[in-house]
Length: 263
Image (cartoon, rainbow, N blue to C red):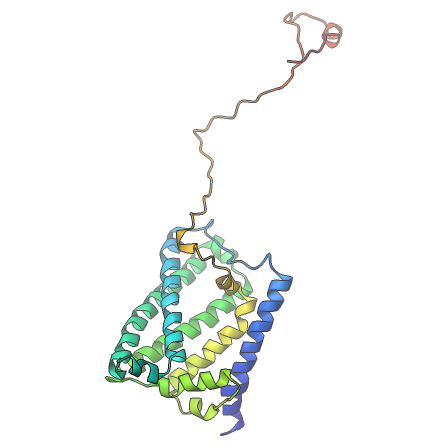
């Protein structure tokens, strides 16, 4: 085991995790007004209405799949009667479908930001970095799934024997970098991209993921009011007015002397 592998599979993940938690704490303490998704719906809504749900719902199932695959040991699924082959296809097929939805949604969101001038001007430097890091993590993960799991035979690559134990041991301070060093390069690239995304997460708009309300799916739509040309000006109700003489020939002096009364 060389120093490079030790850095990649021990030091780098821990640095990324530390940057994540410290960054989240710092962002919450210093920039709560910026803790938002920075929505650009007001500039363009057609593509957003299609791409955003595909991306977000796809990511929900991708994250669930990651948690199940990395946190649940193989012995647990065998104990409940799920064979390795059955688990492989249960994880691979829905994961591939969710990955396709995520990629289509992400492409639509990026296309929208590039093509629509107003949305492009509202895109910050951190947004650009976020899209690059997010795209790398998603594409490397999808490529690893398709190349090794979907077309890798009946069993595919058994990441529950290598990547899952490596991560669990890493999180309990019992790092075993030699396990991850023996994994296929596709999963290694995805792991590096994933931890890099974790490191920059607190400094981008991705922090809004931790503020999504429980009732998000049942929330009312944001209503934007538009000016209707058919709307008549509102009548002005004046509480009091000066009493004017009906005689238009009255002199200015007489008008100035006209008494005032409450209406």
